[in-house]
Image (cartoon, rainbow, N blue to C red):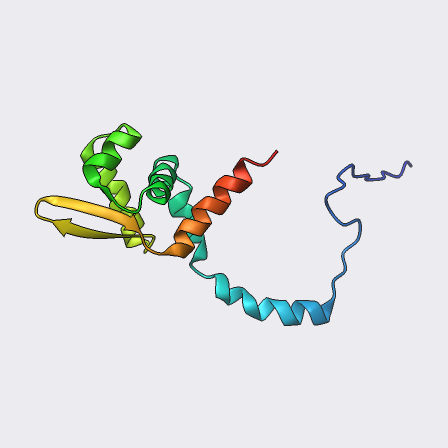
Length: 123
């Protein structure tokens, strides 16, 4: 009778299962702090919304019509994406007569977009 030996070629996993109980007990309760944060990344994971967010890092404020022309879409499409960014608290808006202007909500959003762009452009 032959015995089968299972070998793995993955170098990105542990060969044995063990853990530091004190470390786990210290870090695990903190996991609730990230609840909902994934929604920010989900909102920015769409290429069109990321382009809009990036455009808003280049200009402090943009009209919906300008955004539509920048991204090459209809005003309805631009408005839809801007509204989603606003609902996720990533952008703010103001009305001036019949025009609607959008801006990034705060410096944190600008930093997040800028850091993501820097990281993407690294070697």
